[in-house]
Image 1 (cartoon, rainbow, N blue to C red):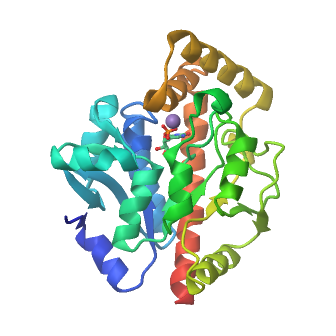
Image 2 (cartoon, rainbow, N blue to C red):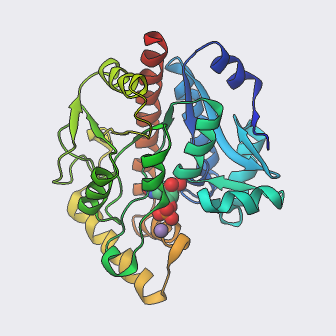
Length: 303
Ligand code: PSU
Ligand code: MN
């Protein structure tokens, strides 16, 4: 089984240059068209401006592709929810049926790792859902962080999740949560959550050094690096909490479950806030892409 790596990404990996992996579920299921495509292309531009090579990852016609073309990104964005949201468990059927798959954080980590990419930027990861004590809804993203050596830069997680339980799960699995210039876990739309990160580091170089130490000791697994949304784009905490409550209530009434719940909640939040949350979402993704690129550059300098 082969994965396809674009020439630009292959050349960068072979020469030890900085590369940043990017996911595709955020394109198909995380934002509406055409903002999703615009954002995906803008994210690639920000990665380049910060000295790294972007590698958007998806499954195209059954081929795991590391370094999607502009046309492929456009295709995934237009197809939207009709593309299969592909996490670890979905990969074999999507590939063997020669289908398209938008890769979640978990599946993107898998292909990034196969390609030899260590740094991955996104908006928010999946985690332990509120009410998981009865639903057992815990994202496969957490398990992937435990087993696959790819380091994920995100803005924390949306409080559609139980952030406290998400941190406990990561602790159990031996996944470090490093705050970039913060002691507190950011909650995606807001800079604060009330929960402490495990370590705080204030420079991309210090983060790169920690990731490099993990590799030298062959500890394996990923690290979660959390980067708060820039102050000027952050949302009012009480307002966003009330919106999330409303979205959760509607999901519960409609009986939305399983892999549909996260996309359902993301869409509801965007609709209720009239697009304000979408703008914040875009800004924080760009902010994460810039930080990830700086870490990737430092990591390539350390080698
Ligand atoms: N959270 C967001 N935006 C997203 C996702 C999560 O704020 O786009 C996507 C990511 O691709 C993530 C996936 O990996 O949802 C998690 O889905 P689940 O909760 O079903 O594991
Ligand atoms: Mn789930």
